[in-house]
Image (tube, rainbow over the protein chains, first blue to last red):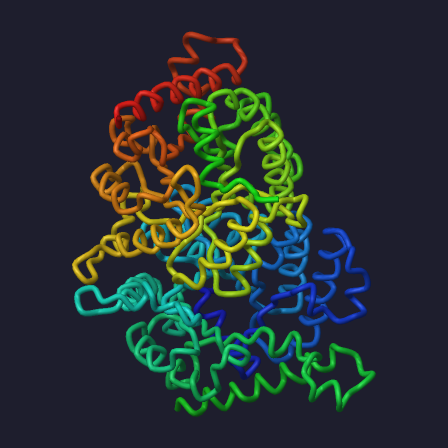
Length: 308
Length: 308
């Protein structure tokens, strides 16, 4: 039986939800709703349980609007092994709700070590994988041979990877913008991404190897969209980090596909925003998350049309 | 109370053990001793327990010979949350045996996400950290601002980081060797490492920010030793990956300090080597590990003297 490729899965999900919104699951203790943060002396297990309950409720209300969620591994890892249980449960719950799961772990290592990450995170659970995420973010510093084990596992099971190309942080350019042979380092990485993705591109025209390009660098986003016609682009930095719908419009192809746009804090902590607190005092926090997700999904729907 | 800096801790431990040997803890199911791999249908919890028992016994026999161990996160993560429990127990056990723990996770992310990794992995357990490793390997692709949270936490608690500079894999040069302003990318990264480390260098002359440079590139190892006089260098690739004691000699300063040399498979799976199987049939696997660690520690002791 042939598996549906990750590129095609994404195209289908984006069409189904009519939006390229990815909701970033970045749970932080100090930002949890009061009802989940009852005890600041809570142990790791209690905190991890609160993280799971938070992510579960977020997933439940955002699932009509987003094709995928992006759990940030760091925040779960911060709680130790108990946090990893919460991450695992979060992945399972999101997939049960029909969402694709892009695990943001920025992993990367040499040969058989990279293979261990790839098998662990990208092999489906019913095929012997422990985590069974649909995709994983990976770091290219170690070169093509460090990425290949990820591509192999992704190809075999219809999963995907997103390679860091141009990150959204202010200092991301320190190495990424260094000019080598008259091209910045990120363009060299983009070239490799395009090669690896084009090799296995299927019906949608996209392959299993995508790229991370921050919304905070709109000019590079446009340049990199052209440089990687077969690669899905995962765009962080929208919303709280300052990127606007206008900034991300250049990431889409002429069908409004080819890019996913992530928003984390602006959605999952929407109940902290003064506007919601004033207008909806006493209403459940989940309502703020739902409203924010719907609004972001709509804004991004227009951004995809602007690309036509 | 002032904490002992990581640079000084390493110098003290290397002097105490009279060797710069780091034993890499890379448990793999297919290589475990038969007595620990009783059931190939074992579930995650049973496999994780076997990983811990394996690492515990390795730690017990190698601890007289090595200042530090380097657990490879990928192999524990491959077993899911249960594997992370085994990693946690392994870290605790190694520290109880007086070993420094360098967690090989190659983490790296922007701002507050990087901070979550730093706090989670490098804050001591008795100061509220979940993992409490002594040091962590980190990836520099995201730039200086992504490394700073790690440096802050490391400085505060006497921990350290090892930044990937020149990795040991055959394809590591694809990006790392790209020439920008007439210097390879890895030299730019090395320059940053030296700056960050020199800033806080203490009694030993070394700071909390070290570098990873593969034994498989001896010429670069020599060049990078000179370029980063305040940075401890963690040298992978010795032994199984092909690097010799001769190859690593250039990594040490005139006191025989400044570098740690990692060996993983050559030590922890020593019982698989035909020489041991023939000579010691019926003897416990731990004996092979102990002998291999002792031999590697001695070889490397001579390598440090060769640098005088």
